[in-house]
Image: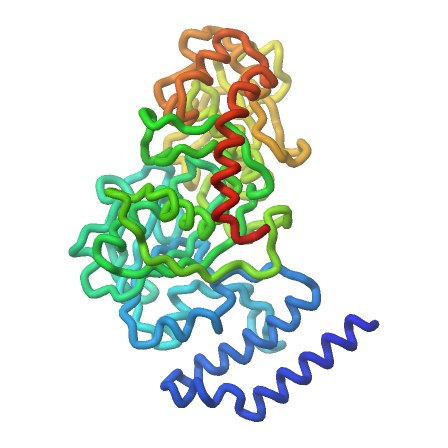
Length: 427
């Protein structure tokens, strides 16, 4: 009852302040009535959120960044997760839980010049590794520049005419998830072109732990650019601070980065992603299992691409079928036009009902290797890129158990955690 009375009192105060013209100064600065109305709604929503301690992603905190965009030519690194969540709706209108950031900014007369799309494209429907072409967004008419394939780093001519770059993409906190590699190249290109970067931060659904082998520099690739563990436990904003602070950009150049932080969030706060961050991470269970199961992408074992349980199952025609009672048959679907072991029966395990992980799990990988019909064809060359080291494959082939393997990571993990502390925003 006291909480409700407090909420109503504060809400009444805010509405009174709005009606008395507290936003008139923004009108005098030339901000449109549409933006003022948006800020009014944002303020009302903020009161509701704070009373129940809901997470407010950076994009939702419009009052903190809209003034920074006025009069500037904007570029946006975005995909389908780059949205502003909405809670308010009238009885006579269809509920709309969110609006895309690009659509919102254009409606507010912000001068959005270009969209830069990462792996999976602007609308997020392309297969992993699929070539994404430049184009034009059908809804807004804004040019889209692909930052995947041969053009991972924006070229100077692609940045021409941009005054400020916004980066707003939902990450999942794994080293081999390529959005943090896109972040690196965007920061580097913008630093070289003297373009500031504004990051609208979002929670890391795997931000509650740090685990895995630290990447060795000789195995650097687009799925692992920096000497960090598989699970780094940082948000995009925190990671950008680390890229700058550790001078990982070319020639140690520094990027002018500003961060709009997430509100009501710590690394131990549970966060359910309302939008798939990529086609083959359909739900929270898949996102939680992803850091552990992605190692299978460097083997002949399927992780469920071509099924409706992507990254929630594993299996292969090359596992001893008498040891498994779960089977599945991969078929082409969205995000997996040609899945591994298409049309073949895979024998394995369904992990969709397992407890949530707060560590990297190697037991399933070790089990599958031990149950493989032919161990000589179990691993492929991609495995070393995923692991960031040749040691993990060798350790599994040598018969080491998970505990023994993890003990060999500890020194490097402790060193990383010590460095990581300097860049954390959400303690």
